[in-house]
Figure 1 (cartoon, one colour):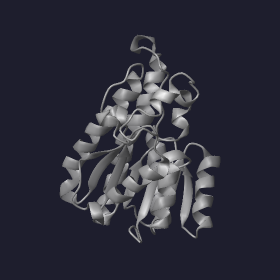
Figure 2 (tube, rainbow, N blue to C red):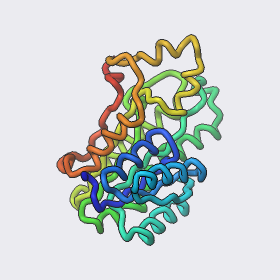
Figure 3 (cartoon, rainbow, N blue to C red):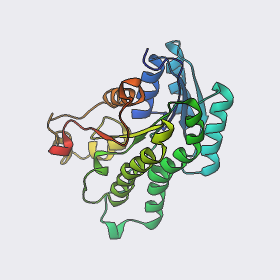
Length: 250
């Protein structure tokens, strides 16, 4: 097993990419802490892991809140004794409107959940990851963190920020053997794309807007996260890996 005896913390673990990754990591031997604001969906992820004889707990977390992230890290260490892998995955989209029409409160919310949460995760997990001797952080950016798209200014900016924050942390903590990478999913079959999926005019175009001509599934992103978390990626840090079916080149 590729993550045997590792302790992983995954934010946004109640569904989509977070859930798929939590289950995949558990199947590879990791003890998993599922973190989410939604207690019901988070506990469901834990139940699915336990059904396959995996080990997992749920910790309710508001990822944009400093004290909540501190509690997540402290409770993880109290329960499992260490943290080896952190996946800063929680995220939201914003209303599709022109930048001047985006409400300031929505901008702040998207930045809080998508970018500040990554900063807070790094801030409070790094000391524990350094103790592990070979810590790993994986941040979920987006294809739209690598290129612009009309009408999603807050999402674009927040996910672009994740890319550079990833590089910053990789440079600062590489000497402590902490690797920091990001993944940049394209159109993935999760609830975050429901507003596109329900658009009968645009969805046939959006759903094929990459080299492979299809959307991805959360398990495909989880496979990329597993690689970056494993020792197979031991000489990889500061990288943002697109998992987008070739969307970046389309």
